[in-house]
Length: 285
Length: 320
Image 1 (cartoon, chains in turn cyan, orange):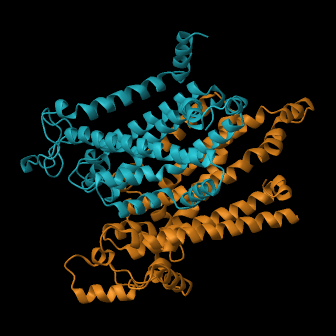
Image 2 (cartoon, chains in turn orange, cyan):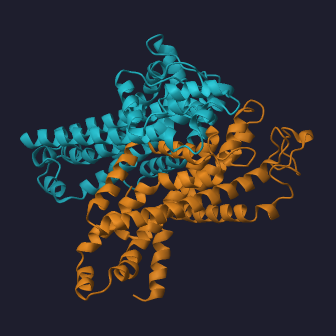
Image 3 (cartoon, chains in turn cyan, yellow):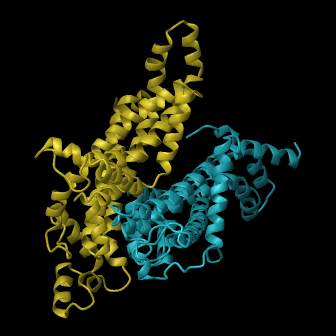
């Protein structure tokens, strides 16, 4: 099969869910555009207060109206996307790198270090994930950086376990044994053979984790223990809007809907990616 | 049977070790804090005498291992210390609030398991049909929906617009069962979203896998009725892996209850966590991390034992 055929096959399987897969990709692209070009897309600033517009109803100037402090809701949604994107991408990258490194060490060395890492994973998994993230969040403080660290720490077990399993199974495979006999350096085996083999599966986990992390960040911000006011986040916008549920339900509905669509888009993209990368797993989960 | 006893013994030992490790983690929360935990808890304007008193009360002047030992000793005597925010005894707080949370989470897990299995089977046995597709879309959506948001939507719909249900507070079923149902219905439903969708999707996948196996084909060739094949032969193998999944859901439902209690103002442990985090009441968080994790580990141990009862392979091989 040529490279062109492979790409074509990838595309066919990726979009095999029909309209849903196209919608998922469209929402992810929209999300990225909103996050990256937020300052160009809106004439307002997310924290510009104008009490004359307090709880203003939707109009041409303010498409979704304004919140209690007269801040434009659309603007805050766009900037909220920005926060979600930055926090989730960074924490997923940090989590993936740390988790893969630890999983690699645990899988490759077969001594007390390996046992220690895997026991640690068991203990972390025994603590409810949200409780764990909240606790780490307390230790590192309520800043965006602290939150990124807490979130990345929370997803460590998924990467460690994945990498550990992959390394163990690959270590048994004939071609790795052959490389060892051929006196190829361990570092070269890892970089040239183990990592590329692990990459596709990692991409699937990464995409799925992006959606999950966006959700977790919003959840913590909703509870008031994530990113602090006045930074616009979808979670805190829902929490603020909840107070005006009687008169202006839109204030709570709009950010939640954005969140739902983005998280669903990432979940579906993750599923499709898995189908395309590993056809054996099709339809699982 | 002997190996099953060994298997259970090993599980119990592992659970005890896990609890021990978690207790160290919980203990360290106060000690890994950047800055002075006592000042953070009491507020920076507090006077020196109060700071010194609390430091003495928490044994912070003693070496770390001694502190840990004293903390654990206290817990075995039912003494978790005192909440700085509320000024009350933490063990009393837990005794008061834990049942409330259990009245939400236990029904929620139960409903999720029962409904999840039914929906999963219906989807798998009607694979590709309109029912299967609709339910799959609903389950996928449930898995991606923000729990706090759907809670607010429910309040708006059933509480504000239709006025069918009250939307804040909690009534214990031992006091008034009807009122309990009315208050707890919506929180229980939103807590069930994640567990229900995971279980349903997993049952569907397992059922489809099992249906395609040789022994099912053989059973069909023997002319056994489809109904009997499905519910007698297939279902057993479908449900065994689900026990592991239920164990996972026990962990994740803590997150669900955190939101349900916040949105519906239910005075349970989860709401206590949120309030304690906001008020830097670390001693309460420390205690709750330990207590909640203890419940999760215990639930997992129970499911591991149940696993052995359901699956003879584990009973005989000891889980190897």
